[in-house]
Image 1 (cartoon, rainbow, N blue to C red):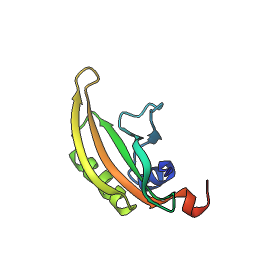
Image 2 (cartoon, helix red, strand yellow):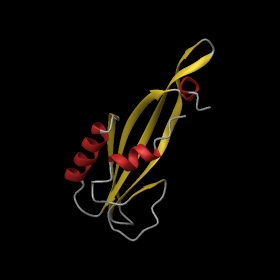
Image 3 (cartoon, rainbow, N blue to C red):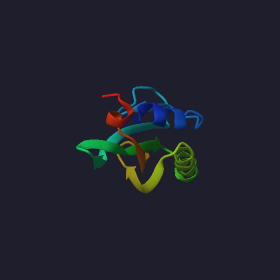
Length: 117
């Protein structure tokens, strides 16, 4: 299983927003959370998985126009080796927040090949 947590945090460290896995517990009005949507072996040889792929959803929350910061987030993720898949935009009326979901993929050599299992 690809551990994307340090990869995401490192990729977004210069964005200027708090970044946390799954839920945000701080007080900032703009923040990023992320979660693995799928994490699995993708290629096999000799009864072993040799490559893995993780699909990660990066959630950006803001009360302001999200367009420019969303673009900056996508660029930072691409520069860190993630493959951009899609962006979905939502407006949460009760919270008065824009909720942007950026979906990316990260491919890596399997733990079984690396010997980390």
